[in-house]
Length: 577
Image 1 (spheres, rainbow, N blue to C red):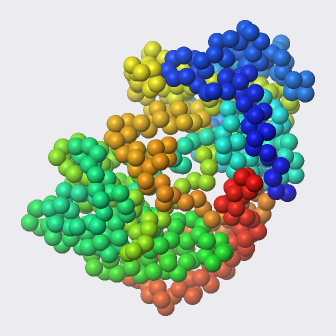
Image 2: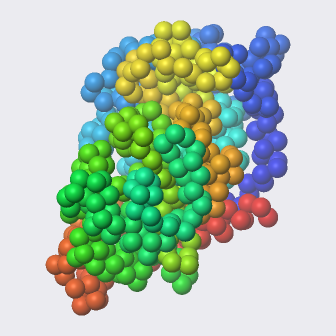
């Protein structure tokens, strides 16, 4: 059943009314003003808001909305990110949540996939949490319960606002057989939609010294960072790599530099140069993974030729990104791949920041990637800001579910209070952080790893636009917003494309088949790629056998399932009708 009954105007009006009663439909004010300007300041005037300091009780809820028992102090077991074996029971954030909502929280020590699998297999699923499992599997195992849509609209109105803005999130989470029920809920992050774009970096001082004309416009945005307004053509990329290897760019008088270095061979930046995307592509109207495409075949042949010419760092085969960072830092590599977020201070142990610290006069060029000669950059972005999968235990009743939704609203969005929201990520206000002079950005007073004092453990999946700015808008990153920020209509964003197809409704067996064959398929694909680039096999001579083996493994059966779903662009377009 297609979810076409979602009338955006009506639903947004309902969401806005609910939001007005909870936190003011106009949104949050900045700084320490406890979130919204008026609504939270006038709770005593009949607001239906969750009373953070009053034990999480609700007032004036509609009769058909289940409410927590006001006389019961609920116990909630939970697991999420940064809740592994080293999680500190009774952490500051845990206690803050308990006091605000009048609950007792038990954090189940399960962070890795293996420990979560063991937890679920033992039948000890927490009351709620974030699980990296398919929705069909969770329900086949009878581990999860549905969540009434009306309850989410009432208790989590901010989340509904994002669902309205990005209706694919409805498609992911609503029950296709009953649009009044969510099967699970997603969190939010804008990092991989609007800001953190995969890109590559060059030693621009080397390029200038070698006299290479890049064929693109370049702007200096800081003392050390320069930005290209377009991708580098493949032929020009080959010229640069040849010069980096053979023309002594570091002036040592020795042939001691490498060309292409990266976390691995399978990088979207490379694929773009051969005119295809990472992930699922549209091949004459059929969804295909990149690794069966003719363009991928040409990529393998092209990189095999580069390797033969000595233009690829042999250690790229290891898949150890720290090796490439080390080469960049010691000036034996002048090219590497990461993303625009590496301009922020959390990336202080990797280039380009390490390089700038070590060599203050260095010039570094950021580009949106390699492109085919005469073509355009091809880059991927996520289809929505949906982040994570929040499931509720099948044994939870409606009254406890109401309390869990209060808990979710509090942990995702700070219950509309920016002080609370910031504390979920940075710790105790006045001790671990404070607002800057504008009252808009938290300033760390105590730099802590994620998980310390419970930071990020509960709020990880609540990275809305406020949090994205807090964690992203540092000087170097901000200097290039006109290139890589969607909010600023960044020029690089025009090349960002969502995947062709994805079974976001979980309506086929695609995910099941994929989980069954993926480990064998990826091992085979990666091994073939390595052997091809190293010149150990002839790609033209072995390509048909390669495709036949993938078919034997179940590749075509898997992709036949994906053929049953609509293209994501068509689903998005349907909401405008």
